[in-house]
Image (cartoon, rainbow, N blue to C red):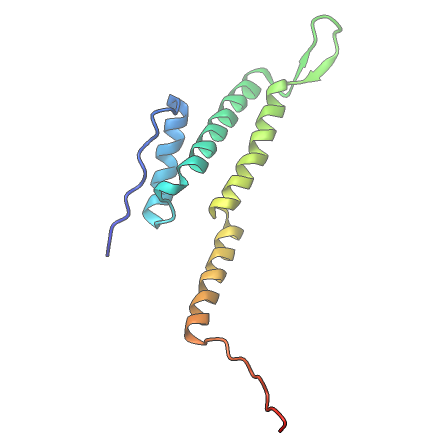
Length: 131
């Protein structure tokens, strides 16, 4: 059996993004679901997750809302919107990459259907032609 090798960390990633990359590779590369052609989407995943992590730190530090110094009104923490937007994007990426339970199940069913198609080839009944 050939051992799959995970793609190397792209040099353009920040330290935080590199941490996400290493974690992602530990979780996915051993399963053989990652290859070099996946690097662009993996970079996007790492950047998005690092952005979510930073936004979450800011929300944890300053809270969900802040009081505007000029008006005195409470307003949502802007980092909350960044965090939520990133979470929506990361979920889409996870689905695309087969990293959610439902996506893995869909991929598994598709693989099983492909296996069955090889075992039971499509038979077309053309009927009998009248002479």
